[in-house]
Image 1 (tube, rainbow, N blue to C red):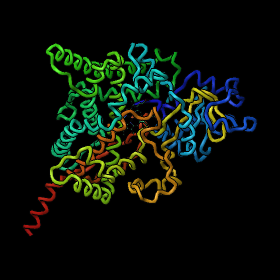
Image 2 (spheres, helix red, strand yellow):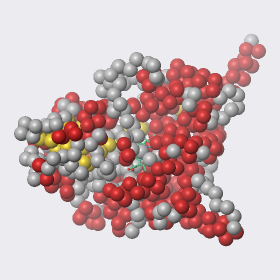
Image 3 (cartoon, rainbow, N blue to C red):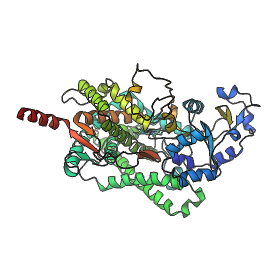
Image 4 (cartoon, rainbow, N blue to C red):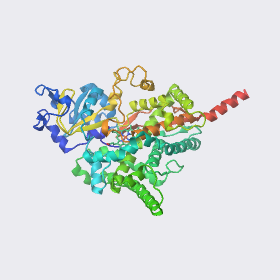
Length: 533
Ligand code: HEM
């Protein structure tokens, strides 16, 4: 999703203003002499304060060497950890004229985020915004900035974040969950020798796309059918291509883009994403018009509400809906994949989850949103998964309102901060034995040594935090609880381990293959065997 929010891409993106501001470096600019509004800045003795020049960090050449010579291009999340060991928790990286300030402790990340201002900016996303400008599309919540961004969020937020609205999506999602469970059965039978599901993340991608579409568009896309519709396949392909190309495009100055062969492709994949969303919006508008003509009441959820309330123009609705669709697929699907991967490798953790689910939802009872509040282990499993695999391993903020002080250094306005969430998630001072998958650490009442509120913030922070958080959590809880009730998940018998890579988002480097053992037929078989014995 959101490239700038995102790790590697972020590090390579740039803005001329930033560059100028950042070049100002050590000497405090004229505007910087104004008294800053933020409290942390006001307390500082300006004569003694350190500046950006006092920060260490790799030069442009060293950065290139790390990315391409040492092959960190795909594992920039690991580069966060390795660079923080060399340069300390606050360092600057140079990418040509662009300077990025990396922040790699929970305390320092908190300092940045608490000074993010009224209209926080992740980064300016020049390539995503340029595409919208040339096609005259509206910006959505990911790409918009300033007061306009706030207006869009105030329209989009209620039905995405208010618990009563979000829980109303339970039935729609549960239908998709039922289909996914059937799809697993079909995959095992057809391609998995009766037990295996290959490329679980790929299958879950289709689940997530179907789930988000059923909520946003109140329609089913057929992603879980045996044969996935061609349009949907193309959408999935286009999202992948867009994320793949994003970090490449921003490596080059904007003036060169039209001459780059990949720019045409980048525009073409975006065109397809907008086309799919546009078709769905048009279809919904036609349905609404038909109902109005027939004098029927207009009922519906997200998209219907947006269109009927007329707080946004249809072009704006399209801009926002496309970005929601984009943001809402890889994120949940990858998180569920990692959760299953670890549950398969840790049978005790899985057994505890199974027992929790059947105690709250015995027999055929389907998990509801109220049931989830009685499943602390399920929530802890997801929390721990997001600690180990934060989908957005490195977020960003440009503090545009004021110069700010972070870690005793004064930074000019428009400094680009890279928040190294991945490195902090593995900080052993906050999370002892950080490599261990331990949902236990998230249970209330457990001894939580040194837990810091900014130790793991997988959905971001503040008013610019994830818009889809509640929906994503609902989807993940409903699916995981029912899958584990139905199937026992076991690892790939070949013993293959899967590592993450950063491809804008943190994703599995290789396919995750898992065994899904049907619990009911397993029980029947063992009962038969016992009877026979
Ligand atoms: C496991 C699932 C997800 C994770 C871990 C996640 C994480 C994030 C993070 C870290 C951000 C940046 C927040 C910040 O800058 O402070 C973000 C932004 C965003 N997310 Fe999510 N996300 C998830 C699922 C979703 C879903 C399902 C949707 C859509 C329904 C969604 C829509 C968005 C949007 C629109 C933004 C941009 C918000 C803004 O800039 O105002 N996300 N997400």
